[in-house]
Length: 184
Image 1 (cartoon, one colour):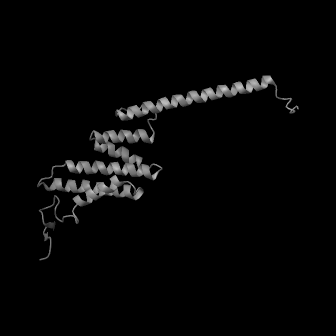
Image 2 (tube, one colour; image 1 turned 180 degrees about the vertical axis):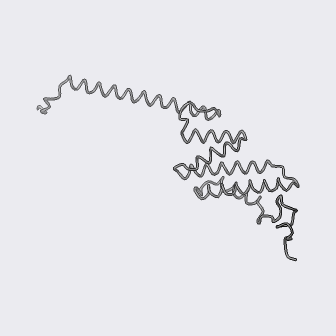
Image 3 (cartoon, one colour; image 1 turned 180 degrees about the horizontal axis):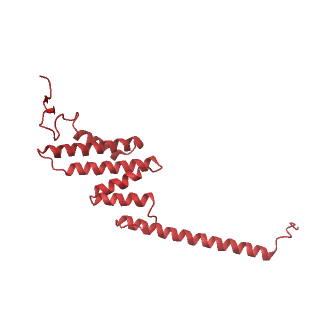
């Protein structure tokens, strides 16, 4: 009933299994360390602190841009989000464009336009930028209802046709210095 495994001795089998145990223990220790890093990363993101690990990851940059936008540092946040538009997955790019659209939309809502033409132009510019970002997000991921709803809201706030002569040019109603708007 011999199997013919004369090269396999008890000593060799013990050493082989010992090596497997040591390698398995090292793998388990590495995985436990990685789980600890992930938990500390998630805690840092939740409290808007910069993470100590994975500083160059997509998630870290996204979280940093998100918190900058929450604190109304829109310029810095837009730069970070724009850098993330080159990511690999369409859903990640759609999320980035959605947040860029949100920043422009919120900034437009906060501008007190009143009767000031410059403020109205700024609001129109911000809303058109939000529209562009939301359209890109919908093109990449049409299933996000939040993006679609925000795009609809922006479109309802934008004028159908840009108002000619309503800029910081000569006077309202004039397109090119002395050519009146409309039919004679």
